[in-house]
Length: 459
Ligand code: IMP
Image 1 (cartoon, rainbow, N blue to C red):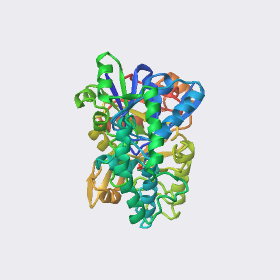
Image 2 (image 1 turned 90 degrees about the vertical axis):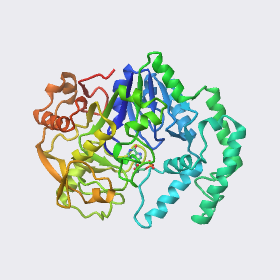
Image 3 (image 1 turned 45 degrees about the horizontal axis):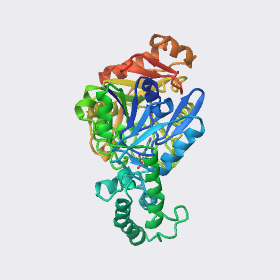
Image 4 (image 1 turned 60 degrees about the vertical axis):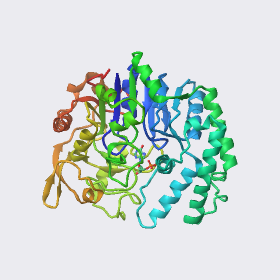
């Protein structure tokens, strides 16, 4: 059986903790898209682990697989594996031979393109990890795949084709000397890249990490293993269903789970698809956010620090209470009220069979909370998100107000269960569940997985 975990908003919904919670009963935990742009923090036995690539289940002794839909930076992969080994763990991580490799030049080009776009305030605010340029090369049929690292002849052939093109782009388009980059001295040097990446290939071979993901996972499933498919990022930064172009370059939605693993849509659809919801909204990087409170300079479009003091106070309160700073970049996250049109869109795109709502404790202490129940656009009321980003930016939220709840002894509530939640919090949660017509499986009331009210176990 499969359980697929999908972010329903803009990433950072707390997917890691839900994966962590349910993966106890899973045998294999698979990531199906994205790369080391996805920061997640996992607390285990009093220790905190910050990971960006290795599937979090690997901390709990599960087999972790990076599926073919991922883009893999081997430097990050081996750094994270080493860090886990130094801390006494023995992670078992496999990588799909069909997954694409993030090369140093991808990171350089990610940075350059963002710089150029920022001259006209068009930057996406990427994580700078080279994600977009790697997926570009995948679609352009000039990428380097994990399988290529295992074969020196193929690796050299691929590099000899692609590197001169990248050099020309750096030089002719961006007027940058590819041989004079302080942070990445060998990013455009075929021989140096060959040596470094061939060594990663040897290591992948030595550690027996390379797999044909579709076959590996199907065999595991047929042998009765339980699979957990872990999406990174969220629906609204999905390249197809998100607010293009302020998106990541892959598909966090449930469709990505089939394409990015080699398991058929029927297999994914037969399982559970759990939508992870943060009880409010956060966003890293640029792009619209109709329910945003105040703003973050440099990220919120057009924001110059001038905002309503009451909104600023609310945003700061939530940001501090929820520790809303990027795991990968450390940037303060933009904060807004929960947005139901967004969640209706995400539920439709992925077919959620259950929800996990996180950060219910973070909202404690507010007198009242708002939720966008619908949008108003050009005199019309919309129940879900419009398809263009420009229209979305013009949407005015139609708010519904809820009474707040006080801070609680959340440990006790996590132990006592759903009925122990303050009544106003239950009203808020039941409204979300009713509107989406999806049951709530879990409620996060604190940072570690013990701080979770578990109502349903999907396996
Ligand atoms: P990229 O994935 O680095 O190309 O960045 C594209 C957009 O996705 C930017 O707005 C990033 O801030 C956002 N993004 C990428 N990964 C994450 C994540 O794990 N959480 C939240 N936002 C993300």
